[in-house]
Image 1 (cartoon, rainbow, N blue to C red):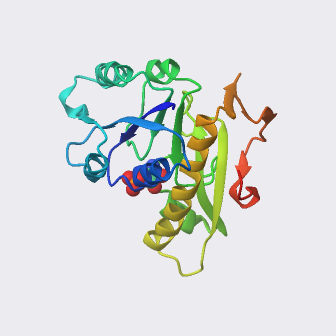
Image 2: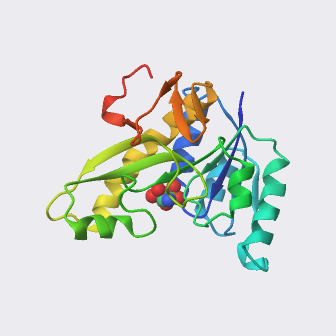
Length: 218
Ligand code: GRF
């Protein structure tokens, strides 16, 4: 089974969705370790409850981004992962880190990229008046939130939505699309080649696959 290392910073609800999928055999992976940059991340408890190894590498204990990322790479590589998953990992990574894992590093972002990269996506989506918001899973490249898109799920924005309500509905979609992408990767159906995404040898459009188009048996 492919070995996966998951990086988190907080609640870890996406981590939980991935753990659940891996336990139900929908998603044939071995989660080798969960690493957090925050000692109090709730996701660490979720991992421990599932008997997954955990590690904390506290970014505040390092002199700079380079030193932190080097320590992270060193720890991750002890598990020899086939895939590294950023599941709510709230640190910008150095080019060296990203290049080290190119093609086996994926992230989830709570917006329909390329719209709303960065933080506070739900507030910004509401303010901008868009009718549709959502979530994106993408390969990570050196451009922050700019890597090639794999899968997106849309969520309708209601006229009276608060950022919290919208975030909640987006999160539900995140929990569907992230394990699915990991499953595709584990089945060796998903490949990044020359900055382009291929699923079952078919090149994906720039906005990836729309989850509404995904059929049951995928
Ligand atoms: C998610 O919305 C994710 O897209 C964003 O941070 C949040 C993490 O939530 N990057 P959780 O820790 O998985 O619950």
